[in-house]
Amino acid sequence: MNITDRISDLIRSKHTQLPTLPVIIQKIMDVVSDEDSSASQLSEVIKKDQAISNKILRLANSAYFGFPTTVDSVGHAVALIGFNEITGIVIGMSVMKVFKTQNPKHMDMDALWTHAIGCGNAAKHISKMLSVDFEENLFLAGLLHDIGKIFFIEYFPDEYQRVLTETAQTGRALHEVEYDLMGINHAQIAGKLMNQWNFPDTLVVPCSYHHDTTGCPEDHHRSARIIQYANYLCHISGLGSSGNPLIEDNLDTRNELGFGKNDEDTMKMHLYSQVDNIQRFLQVIS
Image (cartoon, rainbow, N blue to C red):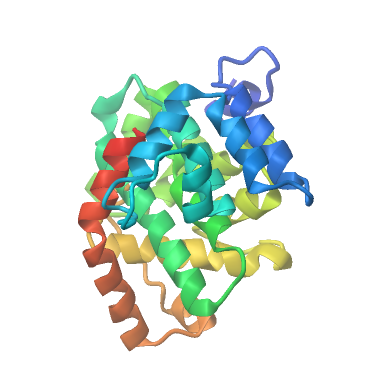
């Protein structure tokens, strides 16, 4: 069986050793998918998980948000931070927890998560600049866009080391070397994992197509472009490290989103200003 078949079997198998997300995530998904749900219902679900509740309160009282008053309850945090963003943060925390890789020697995991948080931050900022109404979903998509790399490191460490070595030696794009050597790239893996976890298409599709939007469903094309551009901004800003030595040109993406060079410089300055906050965010949620 070749490696592509092994990967597919691992993801599809009902007896797989793939990590399962905590029950709280499905409960949160149920609340979010109910149009009649309220912030208080979300708060009640979160409060049932003491560890996550404590992290939410620590984050709400950190310099990352910089609220002028003490946030003393989960309900207060949800009210201040917002229903959708809290949802994204809790899901992000849970995914980070289940993907605590046992093979960190293959990649600097703190640098990878710093890049991921930066990408989420950048995606949210881009969404605000474009006045789109799904910025929190894009924050979460940015945060999770590289989980396919962690899957490779966790389950195929030797094979992925060869990918990383060839990428470093040749300077080729990481996702291209992944596809050549493993038959699938980390963006496609991210999409398969999210489908397995029953995540909505608003997360699955942008993550699946964040390197190549060819074939991306039209309804999610703009979101995929936003994640693609956020990823690029983090690379050129040196925010964390994704393990990819090649900074791919994204002029087409920038133009399609309607940005100019001055806009890009403004977004880079925003990311530079967020470096300390992103590190604080990582310290709290990891």
